[in-house]
Length: 448
Ligand code: ADP
Image (cartoon, rainbow, N blue to C red; front, side, top):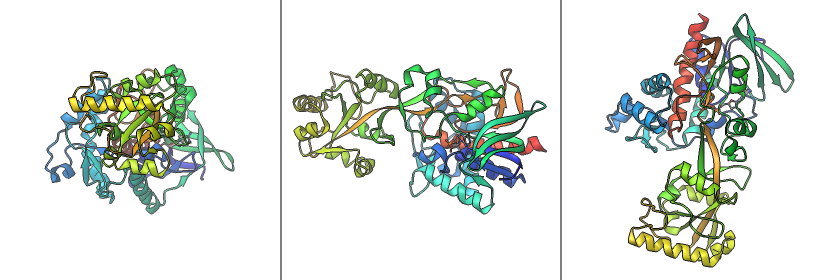
């Protein structure tokens, strides 16, 4: 670690790594500081892909898309609350970001779709590997090729302000405290889903929730920025995922596919209590009303065979199995008579195409009849923090008067506003690459 760099980049997720490569390619000398022993942040946990419109990849798949549709659908998904200037920049630079990755040998040639999008615009590797690990691995190859300095176990504690400008950071390293001076600093520190105190401050109802986030997602960048006068936005907008297995020390998000293919949710007696395919928000509220016990996904072999991921959940011990429903009830700790009646009633509802009890209308193509039977214990967990630091489309951090704080930039989940009150799947990875590139470019411009 040297005492001076052109730019200090705090955080080694998608935003930080992209910004470092872009800054380096413009001739700057960046350093990346990561507080955790592991590189990649929450980015490594992203699974779906990277949203972008008007790409050559889409045309190759005969999909004609538009920035306008991407904009409109993201705005609708975000409850109309999205920062429109950021959203405009985001959508209109999405195709360029896909091209930039491809220019660096990072090809996202396959397409899928996520909730709230009308066309296939979620780009992923043709291997269909989860996007997060793939992207971090590939970006790290670029970082290594350029010999960019990247230090783990270095935590930034403070931003230094001199004559109204950010001029460096104070950090803790395994060898003690250091001061690093720099012309510009980028906050790419991710969200605060793993900081219970900060969550509780803005969302008292969530303070006891587990999280799908990595333990370093503690909102440090938000607090660092706030200490130098930055404005925060949408801090109470937190995405909760209703079905997360959290009985081990790692919380696993159980994808909507299990319910979509026909699983039901039951309480700790074995009775249904909600339309399983209602919105994430409503399913979460119903599970919370059970009083902290969580709920159980119940499904059979037919459903299991249609959801590849269940094999993985089973492999790591998250799935309970019973040759018949009695055995499953005993294994899971549910009341056997209640569970049998619940499944019989559900199968009748499927046969009648009418769920009189909870008005479910989707994912009702399959009954729960072919043993063995399975259960997964789930509860809601914090998944993504939409709020954070206010920036302009040039990634400059804004003060309370919405004027840039000289020398301070932010990109990625640490930023608030882009996603409104609900982030669409595939937009978080896109955000890190699009605004990571922009931050690298704008820091270069600022330092000229
Ligand atoms: P994004 O998707 O926005 O890039 P990630 O969560 O993937 O965000 O990455 C953010 C990274 O920043 C994480 O690896 C996290 O551990 C790191 N980080 C957070 N706070 C600090 C800090 N104070 N000093 C250094 N690194 C930090």
